[in-house]
Image (cartoon, rainbow, N blue to C red; front, side, top):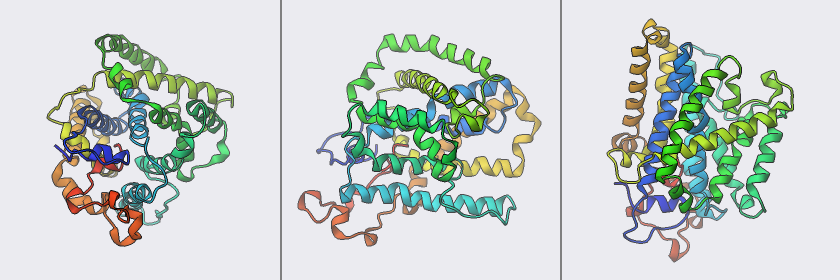
Length: 373
């Protein structure tokens, strides 16, 4: 099991001796990262109606669940130097490294020599790191204002009717997914315990069945862009007033399915619990495999038109991201995913200027202290 200090460090606190990580959140992060990888794989074979139905259901809640957990573990974030340092080393540096790597992969792996490197236009899934930087930097504001969730919903609605925002730093997603992060800031442990009740689990079954039926019905009627939250209503060919309506509707559905997801996350230690501490590695790396398959044309193989082909791809995606979350991968890439970078900061920036904040090499960070992915 990962260091007992890790989960509490993400909240900016040092865990008391003997305090263990909460298996529930590690389990939730692992299961969510599997859904992210599987969803990206399904996104390559959406010609199949059953696959697209499952894809729509998963895309309704997998990132909201991640974002809500990230907000929950950002509750103690403030602008103290030690927190800013962790934001830089745990989010900004990995973003710069992997945005550059994915751009070079596009240039040379897809024979696209004119493809440029830009940090303002996040590649594929890396928008989440940009958003997390902005959300965490604004955390003190959300902890200060009254009714923060209501304010975040207003901002999300305004974003949905503002096509002039553009694509820089995926600000549409920053705004439209913002309510999940702010909600996470307001949650307490008992909220997660309540959704684990047997009655909630039983109610979640018909809810999931209804979600699948609605997803099937929506395929010819609703563009996937509404689930991506990366475009304003006008850019999706809809009247401006549908933006707030769809934002509120999709957020409501996302919260309902997220609650159903949390209801079935095990609270006890499972075989995959320890992998929850390495999900940032799986998140950053798995898209190389998806893009490589796209560049090579693998997803056009007729085998994926058959049910067994889609099932095989699902299993392969889940297995691949599981491997990418393991300790050997973490050890090999820790230098870029969770660099210490003591040389880059003033002494007090790392929290070492005060005796109460001293850290030793034995207290090295684990992946989960930086990003709840």
